[in-house]
Image 1 (tube, each protein chain N blue to C red):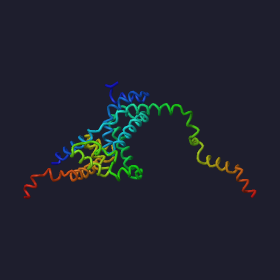
Image 2: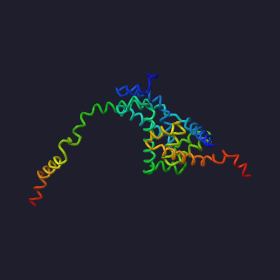
Image 3: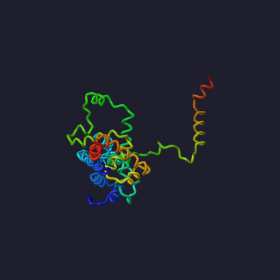
Image 4: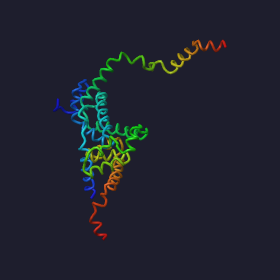
Length: 193
Length: 82
C-alpha cells in the first residue's frame, strides 16, 4: 500500500479503507502541517488543522475526483481552514488564560519562542505573520510550497493578477521587514558615496 | 536582485518551517476519530424524522397544516370563551 499512488489510495478510502487514509496522512502530513503553521503561527492550531484536513478527506472522499492530483485539494482545504481559524481568532477575544500568558510574556503556542533557531528564520517567520492574511497565504504557497502562480490561482480560486499583486506587496513587506532592501544593493550605496 | 530576494526569503521560510513536525500521535488519533465518526453515523437509526417535510407538499400545504393545528388548539377556544 505504501507504494500506491494518491489516486489509488483515494479510491480505497472511498471504499471505506481506513488504512489508506493513514498512508496518505503519513505521505502529506508535513506539507499540511507546515502550511497551516506558516499561516496561523500557532503549533497547536496547526496540529488541529492537520487532523481536520484529513478527517474531511475521509468524510468527503466520495466527492474527490481520483483522476485529479490530490495535493491541490489538500492545499485548498488547508488554506481555507487556516483562513477560517485566523479570522475566528481575530473575531473572538482570547480566553482569560491566554490573556494572562500574553501579559506575562509566556505565550505557549508561538513557534518562534519554543525552538532555538537561526535569527534569519525567526525574522522571516515574524515578517510573514505580520502580513495581511491574503498576502500571507500567497507568500506561504509560493515560497514554502514552491507552487507556481497559476497553481496558486487555481487553489485559491482568484484571478492570477490578484495572486501576482498579493505576492508583489507581500514580497515588498518582507524585504522591508528583513532589511533585504539595504543589504542586497551594496553597489548602489557605493555609487552614491 | 529579485531572484536573490526570492531565494533568501524561500530559504529562510523553508528553514524555519522545516524545524517543525506534526505530533507523533496524530496518525493514531486521526484513524480513531475517522473510525468513530463512521461507526457513529452508521448506528444512528434514522435521520428522516428530523428532516423537513417532503418538498412535494409545498409551502402552501405546510402553511395549511400549521393553521389547522392552531385552529384545533385548545388555547384558541379558551381565548374565545374569555
